[in-house]
Image 1 (tube, rainbow, N blue to C red):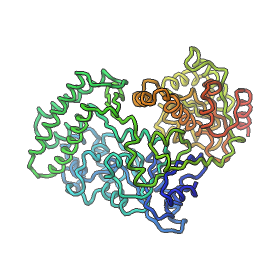
Image 2: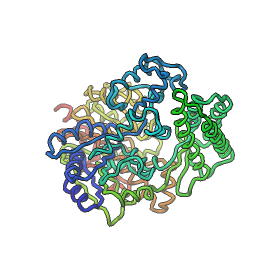
Image 3: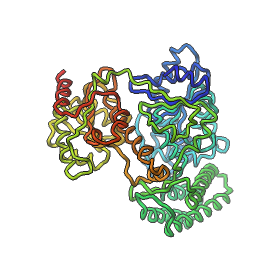
Length: 600
């Protein structure tokens, strides 16, 4: 893989490389990219991986590679504490650390927590939320940070030169290797290259998620909360009760209008939603006009004004988009019913990515690369190479893939009861030690309800603890079982005999009414299943199955309770996306293998 990355950089050709667990893919792309002398951006799927690269992998290479280089991490602005917001909340008296009590955002957060964060801000070098020794509440962090849509920029901020986010940007501008998350890179593309410094090479780690990331960053999201946030920002500057009340009432009107479409695709605004958006646009325009008339420069008024203008201008642009959605995009309403969100996203992300393929060399890597990914991303067919480097792990000896082919179709009546019995038998054979993955909350909750009292082992579920604490609790108890949904199909790394069995309730095909995928199916027409549904299901299944073997000594079983894996005409496309495990349909063989692991 390292040789292929080096060759791609030398010849300025893109590379798509599938690198199974245990390959060491991080070093395989970092080493040749650093040795090339080209400026590199690494875009990771998660902030946790971003922190791992900067905290572990890059320091290791800096000490051992024999070639000096610099590196930096850059995150979205809202990940850094805003010193200007801290100053405003303290009422300008940052020496006494006393909350002023006049900030609308700070009113919703405990004062003790705000003071603790502000005090940390006087000690930290980075201001990065990830460096906190505790997890702040949503309200407290929101009161002390700003998003890119609000920030007026370093030159217009009263204390911009001290800004943590700007300091991180300056470090990134000088670095040879810049580590970001994929979402920030998507924002870079959406802003025509305004977010990141110029670079020669980009690596997308966990590239199977890139299409969805670009869809999110190239689109917009609108909710009643957008108006509530603007109302608070305006209230901090302007004493106009009528304007504030109008903005706040628009939040409710928009929520009501969106609720009628909750969970559905919108193929054209109805009268109620159109009216809510148009009224909202008029009120935002009024807010902008009022903000621009503010001439006072007392205290922090100027900074508050600039942030409010930025937020209002961004919201005005989003409302204009909602009123004239292009045919290339799809609209739908998601989120909880009490707080619905209107999402607009491009059906095809290839046009957004087109400048990328022209301007830099891209390496896309993941343990699982969907067959159709290069097509969906618009990679030029004559400008990229594809490679599968496999994995060093001995899946044939250490892992068994079991399909419970005797179970009924998951869509048939009685499936749940029979699946629960199968799951119980396998967990007993494994002695606990099970990660049971489900394609829906309903399926997980039904299994927990059916089996928690029947099993002699602790059964943890996704509602028990926050994810990091839950994974740790599972890892620390060799007999425990963990029942979880889609959030645990990837990014969970539990090694050793604590995890000997991964079960999957059914093939993870997307819902037919999922709006964005529905629009992509319509574009693909008769090829929809092969181009949209099947690659996605195969990739997700492979990600889930990948939780089992995480080291060369791990042993265990992946059990799929969906008989379609053994009988459907498309089964080999799914099976071939999985690691090369031995396969069986016999539960007795599975039980014997699990018992041998348990008793070892």
